[in-house]
Length: 207
Image (cartoon, rainbow, N blue to C red; front, side):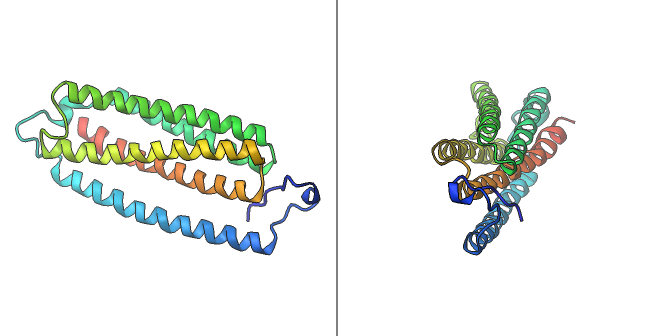
């Protein structure tokens, strides 16, 4: 079990979890795993819907004509880098380096915000060219799948801002460490989902 260092003066000599905190930590992580499983079901349903409808273009543009593989690849690299920096934040937490945690989370936030900006730019370009979600079942399923992931990333950015604020105010405590662990699980999950989106939607859609 990961064991953070308390920031309270009386706890500097003891790096172990008290039994009550250990129990709360385990239940929180287990509960969040259960939430992630429900999110897996959600995305599985969206992937299945896209698989069924991706050829239903209603006479409009196909994925080969619409998707920009270089843009999607750039988005993928940005999100992969963000999951690495999030991992560095977790490593810094094990060494009780609050400043480093905040720094790595700030970099993660900037990368995530860049990802969302590029995704919104892609959506705007598609709509401007007359390829909105209303034009065909293919585009409806595409916007729903990719947009749902983008919404999750946006929630993650808000969540990250709250975690950074708590670390600035309280430092690294048992409670802020637990929240950091749970956030890290969420962010890595989003990165994994995007890899499937890049492969299944963009890469296979262009080839």
